[in-house]
Image 1 (tube, rainbow, N blue to C red):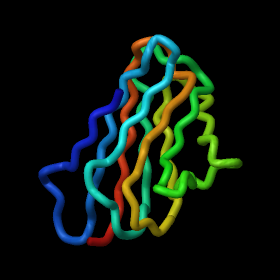
Image 2 (cartoon, rainbow, N blue to C red; image 1 turned 90 degrees about the vertical axis):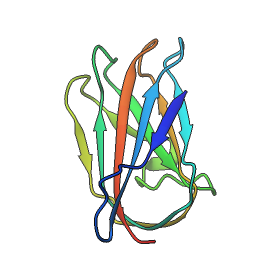
Image 3 (cartoon, rainbow, N blue to C red; image 1 turned 90 degrees about the horizontal axis):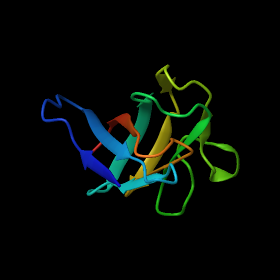
Amino acid sequence: MASVASYPDETGNMKTLLFTCTSSAGGASTGTSVKRIRGVVHRVIIDPGADVSANYTVALLDENSVDILQSDGNTGIICSSATTNVELRPETAVCDIITCTIAGLGSAKTCTVLLYYTGA
């Protein structure tokens, strides 16, 4: 299960979207944005939280099930460290509702995924 929120301090053209994901006993979590994201995703920060398993995967899927992080086979990028934040700069244009899917996180672990995008 994941909660999704926009930051209240958005200024100018830059917008943010935060997925806070808590995994199931099987280590998976899925959350969907409430609103359609229109624009270009410039930066994604993945924070693994505490005591997660290494080599978990994160995918940000558009409505066509294409990973905006541009992972192979749309299966998600592999985060090899359980303690280090991952920063990505996909520069991907979107006009979709986004679903954040995480696998292999460990049982009942929390991870956050923050998107920075410009657009409407």
